[in-house]
Image (cartoon, rainbow, N blue to C red):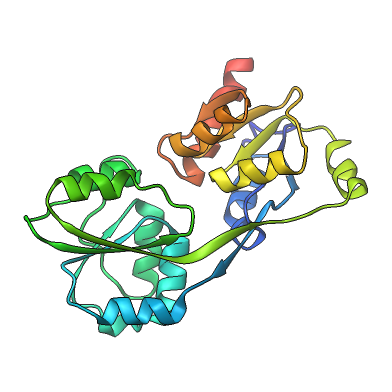
Length: 244
């Protein structure tokens, strides 16, 4: 098998329990992977979610991440769903399929904003969006401007992980060619630890993550398109080919 990423090292900052697929893809292409999980994800508001979900019959249920799927169905029975389902992209659709939930709609671009623009809704449709505690409201505002009734509820949170200086030194004393960020939370945690980008190239999973990186004065070398792990790997491959 061709190994176009041989002699390249990639720092992975996403949560440890979500990194296995990313690691496998990179290593199968010859890359060395360095792990520095910068966030952990935990559920919140489980009882409130049950109350909100059971309070009315929704027309649409929107999932904008695999974490939203995971924590929603930790509290809600899959066989209790009788509304239409929208997923932000293929990964979220796959997570739904794995628990037996068919997806009625995914957008042409895998962002919450594009989903809100393209969702085939009727006026006065009621929509429930389970999400993280720091989710943006761009998509919500678009749906409300389309005359829908939108209810959001935070069902999980991302918390920063702390590391000692020796632990960080062990990581950053090694050769690193690329630093990958899969959410704004990973960027913020990186900055909170006092870390800096030196000569490494930064790859972000999507425009919102890149926006947070730029706000923190990080130079973004590439944004994945599509906004998936596969998109990040492809962006990395393109950058390596352009170096040759």
